[in-house]
Image 1 (cartoon, rainbow, N blue to C red):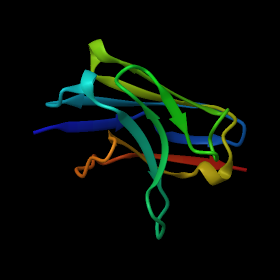
Image 2 (tube, rainbow, N blue to C red; image 1 turned 90 degrees about the vertical axis):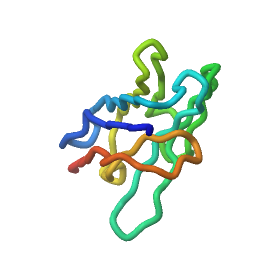
Image 3 (cartoon, rainbow, N blue to C red; image 1 turned 120 degrees about the horizontal axis):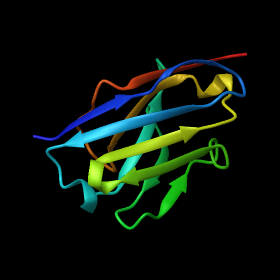
Image 4 (cartoon, rainbow, N blue to C red; image 1 turned 45 degrees about the vertical axis):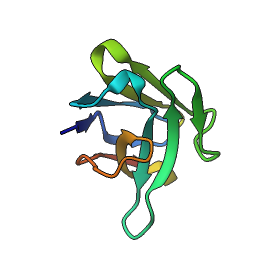
Length: 113
């Protein structure tokens, strides 16, 4: 059974940076399109960024130009580098296989103004 463990969240001031990590196990990681999502209480989970098995990247309009997704297949790990953070980026961040249905615990990101 696959497992995804997110880490790297925290509290920062607006304009700051954080790097999230997601370690995968039990999945054919290098073959998967991986994604980062975020969720605010009371709202639907939002797709933030994706990276394909070949390294093609895509971003939501709300984070494009500020966030960078990357992966290291040798480590079964996907990253999300977040810069120029805004208070509206505050959420629990999750990684998953694109379209995956089992979720990890996520990592909280809080951005203060």
